[in-house]
Length: 567
Image (cartoon, rainbow, N blue to C red; front, side, top):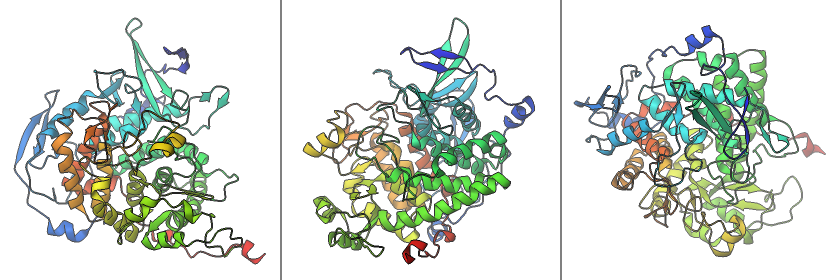
């Protein structure tokens, strides 16, 4: 790889090989073979009773021509079939209804966003809004590509997902520097961009590992999403050869080595800087944010399924299992909030010193915000935003709670309570456009102190209580797994009423999500893909198996007192 210089004068590396990934010819030919179609056995990832009661017969079909004039088959629920799609034995849909007109429009928009590198599809652009400055929206973001990847997998088109996994794995091996500091070997890029040189008639790739990001923060979530997507690809296609390659096993272990390294932490959670995930600006989520902890938990569980059973693989598996036990206990015990726990915190004593302390983090009861008492329903609960010494962030964060359900970090009882909360606080969390990224927003003095007077994160806008349509797919998956498909249907209907008319914006503003975001890009790819994934999952719940993990009964170990108790 030779260095190149982008328009800002930053040194980068470019790809100099002609293949999508630098491996032997025999391995490459084997990798590019289309994976065999397999039958996906439906797991107990959703309510069995609701599935059986809502079973329906196969509907009539109609045809749709995409932009390349290749035939696709739609059933009248909007699912798209291609010859390579895996067969399933589950019901086609929860609801008997016609295909919504915006489904075809969404697929066409998703196809237009595809990025090619040397004639191979490798990802999708963040947005295709020609009415405003591109900034970094013309790049392929790891987190943004996840819903696009799931849509392609559900549609029987795994090639682009495989290429993306290969390409990002290759980028992981690059030397990563911010100023004079070298990042860990396992760090995955936040994004990459394909550069076309018409003079030399070649293409190169530049990647951003955080050195160009707002605040210069490395993306902690990219590696987790990469592992989760690799497991989804393997689950969807039945193709284990990719994950079992030595290069992929090494990539997984490098990510795990970053997360499982020993240090000064007394908690099993990951300590993070502000802006290291989807909320990539200063929003007071530094410390132990729920989004990162839930993704961490899910990535660890996915890694267990992907690691080979060799000597090194067993060593990593043992470390992962130990961390999972500690992490699940910590999150379920200290991050969980319901009306009983809220009352307990309200009555906390402070300055306790001993192993018998109830207020383990010395949280001051007076720090409880007034809004949380009205927000908390009698039935319901959620994982709060952050827990660290003398600090609890009581805000609701959608992504972290939905991933907690999908990964089974939330127990079945907790998952049901989260759904109860969403249903009882529908106007606050869903409103007129799904879905609040966090609730409530910060205002006035708190906004000035926490965000640094960020003009993009004003009250009820963007990350500060804005409504993000991309979160629809996570809500839908969590609803199906929790046996509440009717909530997902209700949210999808809200999206279908406006999203296409507004040209698929990135986010909405206002308490109810009534107004298109003041700086929202139109034709935001993950808004488009999120809708398609939600639609396809609701119509064929077997797709949930790609992104859902069943509860591991061993995650409830008997907690023994440590030796320090006997001191």
